[in-house]
Image (cartoon, rainbow, N blue to C red):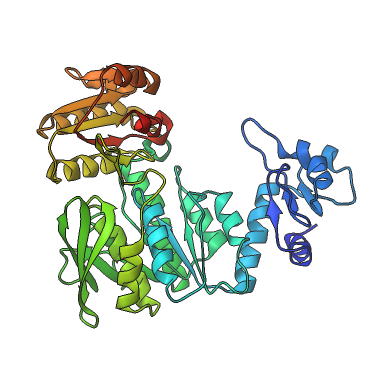
Length: 430
């Protein structure tokens, strides 16, 4: 059966899909996806039993019912059906990728556009080869716009996701040293992220670009993007961080909109670029400056992304969702400039850096040494090898034991590391 036929069944049966046989809304189509440790084909019968109308499988031995649809590859079928749905509805799509800040920028852009439109946007960080099609299949006729986040850790992945989503507009937040194990090099990161630019340029889409980014602007040679930038007086949307005390106050201005000043709930001056990107998108799609200011001032970060947590004993800056050399440097520099007394860092390993891991962790340690901080604790095997002279812990369990016996009081604490290190689990000890 071709993907057009599966799409017809999708439309006729309530426009719902699932990849989890335990979560089967009535009428849903189950796609039997495979992973390193699971085979969705084995659960096709259970999905039908639990309420699905059809099950798409790619192994003939599990095609045991007239309601099973045998295809060459269930994931490819899911992606093709999602692309067809996106094309049929023709909803304007804004695609967002980048090394750091893409989820925050997606959330901000959705909040800004949401002041004027009914917006569908990526839930959480469902931004991969499965998450993007699942997001697109949530589109309904009542949605006036969509904001789709795209993530990658190998070359070619953004090209594939952009082909599925066919964005009308898009932006790359930045490029940094993340997932080097998969990309091979920093140049590989740049090349992969710029696959979004290539898709938009080929199809005549709108590109929003940080005019101050020396790695991305050269890729737009000969193409006129809508530009934004902190301290870039020649950009279409200009901005400046007025203060971080500890929350960011952002000034932004354009020739047409004049100057605006917004008090936000963000910790970290590095979020200014994310906010300016959302402003640029909003203005392009007709959101008023006043509506944009309201969206930015009311948005509150969540999911351990630059969150300020006051516990009564300490003030925590929790940024434990993700970490790579670029975001770690930005967080440490911002922490150094923040007002506050007794400053303590708790830093966890940055994962997936491959052969450059030891060098990059050593660089972070040197940055901490010169920062004038009161104390620093390091968690993980990579920091254990590079953070000589500091207290190090093999894992979060060891850190928790130490913190239980060595209570920290009256401090401002930056907690940052890769999500896999688990630093979010120590908040209760402060």
